Length: 483
Ligand SMILES: *[C@@H]1O[C@H](CO)[C@@H](O)[C@H](O)[C@H]1NC(C)=O
Image 1 (cartoon, rainbow, N blue to C red):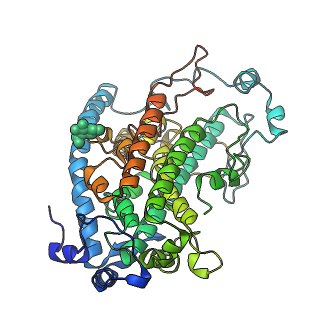
Image 2: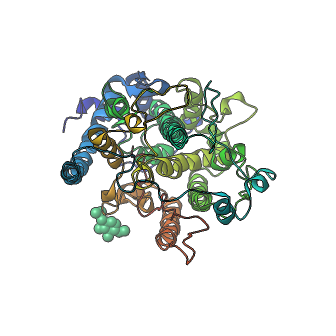
Image 3: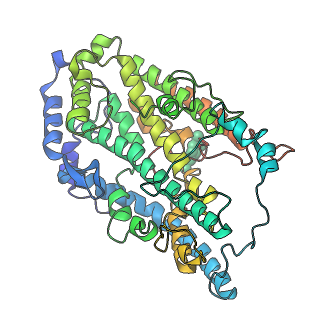
């Protein structure tokens, strides 16, 4: 394993993982600690992202060492995962070869589609008619159109209508993937890079961020957005973020502090809210254990520098603006930041990415990353086959989504249940924080058991929906940003 210049890395991390975590005091800042932080600031630099206007990527010698180390760590998992994928893809290739070697219909498993959805079905599924859904604002419209004024309805030809659905889903997948990048990885990385420039390794906030950022810089640039990487191959032609604020902005809950919603059931919100609450309880306990009062926090020079750096240099959007004076960074603000960091990392990430796309999306002919032929801006399309991936392209697409799925994490204790479960991290925490970590594990394990026990009722529904929502099971999703 090549990890850059280890001497330089060590000097940048001079106060190593072995030190117990402690906050800093402006009024009593030891020269040794100040020097270590100043050296880090001189060493870590921000480099522009390959994607364009996205979060910076760490560079400078210690920054490059982190990237190399994360890639080397990911390589271990990657070899295991790719070995398994290769076996499955081999079997699929043989099956396709035995089946004439190509795709002849839109869905070679079942052609033609066995059912139409008519008004009676709308009534059965929703309990009412479409108009009755519109009146109280219960019908949600997702608008992916950019400039084109073509409107497709069931009155179009079957082929045009199906093409419209495919285009919609391609847009949806594109939106999901770019949203997951911008709202999750970019935020986490920018906040973390500001911390690399301002906090010492012994700061308790750094201790938590380092754990959450495990392997975080491994794949984004070099494997996904490099020329001919996953993005090029599969996406062809082609404080607002806090959980309840975000849901409220979308009109899905009553208020930013009120998770009441208008649906019969909302499985995502129930599970996500429980995880958010558990993180909030942990963050509150951890912050209380290090900061006896808001005044102690205002005196923590490293923490205050981190807040300023995140806003001014790392350009994190909507980060609390403590340095303005009218809004001092109180303990509540830090609790919210740490809670959100936990939520984007697990709840948001793993309901958009991780194991979810390969288990519930990627369905031929409906859901792809990109269109495989140029989309015309006229109706009257006769053949949809050119828009769909051929066998080789389908297999490449399946490989790309399957790589996001990490079944090994459960046996490796790399799941959310173990977020604060490793002995090294625990040993460096305050006694009180350790207790909170124990409570965290108990509570998320209970949620995991509840999610595993979900099943269909006799009407074929689970929590009121025709699928079992298990995407954020703390017993299977990782505690860190795993692609
Ligand atoms: C996972 O954690 C459990 C305790 O929760 C422990 O008994 C087990 O040895 C750990 N496994 C690995 C691979 O670290």
